[in-house]
Each structure stands twice: as structure tokens, then as C-alpha cells.
Amino acid sequence: MKESYIRFIQYVLGAAIVILILLHLSLFTSFIGPGYEEGLSWETVSQRMASPFYDMLYTLLLFALLTHGFIGIRNIIFEYVTNQRTRVIISWTIWIVYIILLIYGMLPIIS
Amino acid sequence: METVKKVTFRIKRWIPEEGKFRIDAFEIPVFRGMTVLEGLIYIKENLDSSLAFRRSCRMATCGICGIIINGKPMLACATQILHLNSDTITLEPLKNLPLVKDLVVDHTPFFEKQRLIKPYIIRQDEGEEYWNPTREYKQTPEEVEEYLQFSYCLTCALCYAACPTSGTNKNYLGPQALMNAYRFIADSRDEGVFIRLDIVDSPDGCWGCHLAGSCSDACPKGVDPALAIQLLRKKVIERDLGYLKTVKGTSLVSPLPHIEGAKRVEPPKFTIRGAKKKAQEILEKYFK
Ligand code: SF4
Ligand code: SF4
Ligand code: FES
Image (tube, rainbow over all chains, first blue to last red; front, side, top):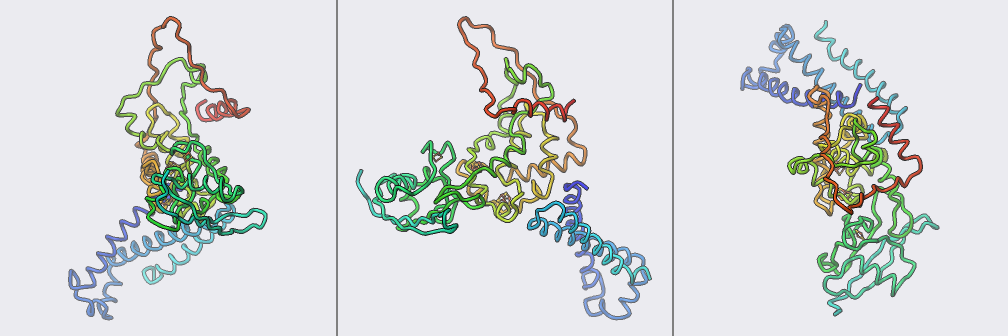
């Protein structure tokens, strides 16, 4: 993949994360939601887990944060590792860990 | 000239035989308007003839006298000692470049990187006219404005020495080469935008920059490489989104009317053997 595609995805996800986090915080606090304590109660959380809207919101947030974070880690490592072959190996390792974590994070939603 | 005060130069000298630095201090008499380079010349002529440093034009034009003065990359010939407001001045060789001796560094990696981005006008209509020009390419004052500040670069490598990314990643093209790529992309006569964007679109190209801006801060000519790198990124994204289609450079203007006795100025000969053939091969690869 071209480097510019990866960086473009990074920028777009950065903007998306700001919106999603604000939405997440608003839904937990009294701004839109029931307030912080009630928002964290067992009933509220279990109710939310059953709602497709929250499933969607948190899947998106998980995807955006993980992708943005892993692209960031890749960029930092690439600054110190300049050998192309090592870079390819590191890239693959990073993406495999990424996929595993993504699936792991989505387990509660899938199940 | 009247001595105003005495100043100590603490010079961090690279000793190649020992593979380490040594710090030597020299006290020099300073007159009004005296530059750091003149201080170094004074040391060489009067105190230590073995001191190595580089200079040529002595007027901030050739860009070879760059050193680190009191922690900042500067041109020795364009820095007045009294303006530094200090009785002790530390001098070091430029960072991020291989050391040769004392204050002298090897600029080869810096120029190699500039060469990679093809710092010349690329034309698709190259032919006899390209190699043996008889006329000029049209360009309006507004079109010149697009790249003017970037053409002031004197390849002094101060930005390269100031860049933290160039320090950590030896493959990073560096502020000057990236800025120079944008300088040619922004030139209305040039048609090599896609070639150069392919070169700079990499983690070691325009995406490696941290936007710290120390390159722009160090530049003695007021060039803003950090800005050029952001403009390069914009161009790369525009290319990906399909905004940048075919790029046509400006056309040739008609030759001047024949003037009796006027002689045609010959373009300089290629100094590197095989350079013309190599340039033709590159152009053929992309345009044929
Ligand atoms: S802005 Fe970019 S090129 Fe300039 S010094 Fe910082 S990292 Fe280097
Ligand atoms: S951009 Fe400025 S600091 Fe960098 S090489 Fe050119 S003149 Fe020197
Ligand atoms: S000697 Fe030429 S720029 Fe300083």
C-alpha cells in the first residue's frame, strides 16, 4: 500500500476518534446520558450491550483507536528501523497483532 | 582595526586519528563587525595553523561555512561575533553529517539526497530543444512567486543539521531535498510532478517530518522547508484523490529576433560523465 494511503487513513481516523470520543463521553455523563455513576451501573451497561446503536458505536471506536494507534506505532518504529526487509517483517507482525486485538475486542459484541 | 574586546572560542574539534573530539580554547581580539569566520581565520593565521574549517565566498552565498555556533547551526561568515553577546563562543561541526576533521564535515549524503529528488526541470517535450535550448519557457511573475522563496536555498545544510528526524533516520531525505522537490513541483515550467511525488511519498520522505520546524528556524536565507514539506503532503494527497491530473508545463516563447553580432550563450557542459545519457534514460522511462 502506498505510504500516502496509510497516512491519509491516519488523518481521517484521528478526526473520527475526536468525534466518537466526544459522543462516548457525552453518553456517559449528564450532558446527554444519565450521569457518570448511573452510566457505569450494571443495568445501564447491560442494556447498552444489547443495543445495536451502542454495538456500532463501540465497534467503530475500537476500530478507529486500534488502527490509529497501530499506524502510529509503525511510524515510530520506522524512524529507528531503516532496513527495508526488517520494516516489512515489523509491518506484518504489527498487523497480525492488530487483527488479533481487533477480534478480541469485538468478542463481547459478537457473542 | 580597533579591538573592542577579547572573546574566547571554544572549538569542539574532531580528531580523525583518535576517533574522538577534543575541545580547544583560543582567545581572539574582536573588532566591530568581525565575523565568526574572521575569528577562525585569525586563529589559523596566528594561533594554530592546523585548525580545519571550510569557507569560500565569505558573503553568505556559497553555503559551505556552516557550523554550530553556541548550539545553533549558522553560517560562520554571516554571524558577527559581537551580535552573539557572549564572551565565550562554542563552535562545533554540523550534526547529522559524517565528520572529516575539526569543523569540517562531509556533505555527500546531503547532496546525494538532493540528487534523488531530481533537482532540475523535467519536460515531456524534451528533444533537441531540451538539450540545446534556443528559447525560454514562458513564466508570469505570479508563477515565479509560487516557488521563489524556495529557490533562495544555497544548500548550506544548516536545516539538515538542525533536523531531529535526519538525526534519527539516516534514510530520511531531509528538509532541503524535500523542499527542493516542492520547489520544482511548484515551477510552472516543470512536468515532473508525478515522478517526484513517487519519490517523496515514503516514510523516509515527506511523511517522516515531525513538523518541529527547526529547519525553517535555522535557514539563513529565510526559506521555510517545513512549509514546503506540508505543501508536498498536500500534493501527494491531491494526487491520490485524483485532483492532480496531467501536468502540462508552460510553452516556449519565440526566439528573440536576430541581432547583428549577438552571440548565443552556450549552456554549461555536463560535468559528470554519462550524466546526459542517464538523464535521457530517466525521461524515456517515464514518458515514452
Ligand atoms: S520540520 Fe520536518 S524537516 Fe524540518 S526540522 Fe522538523 S522534522 Fe526536520
Ligand atoms: S533550506 Fe536554508 S538552511 Fe536548508 S540548505 Fe537551503 S539555505 Fe541552507
Ligand atoms: S563562506 Fe560562503 S556562505 Fe559562508
